[in-house]
Image 1 (spheres, one colour):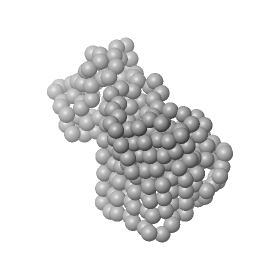
Image 2 (tube, one colour):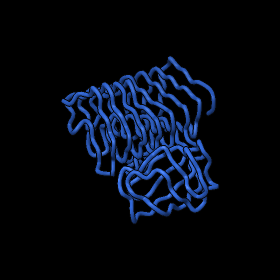
Image 3 (cartoon, rainbow, N blue to C red):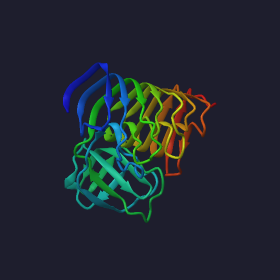
Image 4 (spheres, one colour):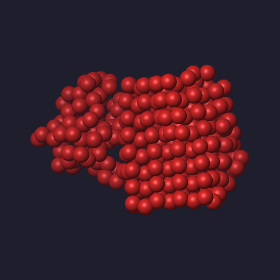
Length: 275
């Protein structure tokens, strides 16, 4: 899907996941989404699959050598020809796993718009091409309802799954009866979850009952997220330089704002309440 918009005033009922691939320049606006799927999707381990899936792709990687201390943003790589200034890359391995932008190249040295938040001395780091990210895609759903009623972790789905994405956003006005996160992300850069309300989820066990889960998030932003009765309003699992503003949870079963000791750093909360 490229350079187009999708708008519907009708209720959209899905019994199987919708895959939109590495979409770009796309606005999706839906009044209501109802999920009825009960098929085994083998979704228990990684929980990647959502009702709506926007998944980008990566390319070739090259190993990093030299200094890997905290604060370093220039990395010596085996093959700098894989990259160009302005391109997106994945900095992975060790205590990091983030999509970044290349801001400079000099010989074998590649400079990123990210500095290591932790000392990675002795770790094996790499840079990988991000060839086809989801780019400039914005999803707005007024109401999302999961009517499957399933308790099978292999059958459960996320609402919207955003993977390997840049400059994109998801907003779900009212969220009902979900199990896995309403918004699930992995390897995102400058993406946003906004203007969403999580009503009490169907289940709130480990990995369940979240409004948004940020995995490997660089510069994510959360704005006006609210809800009650969930496990986490915002969950970070490896995240750097992320912000939240104007968020408010009520009666959550666990900590509404959560990290997982996965080397997160520089997380900022502004005007966010804690119940």
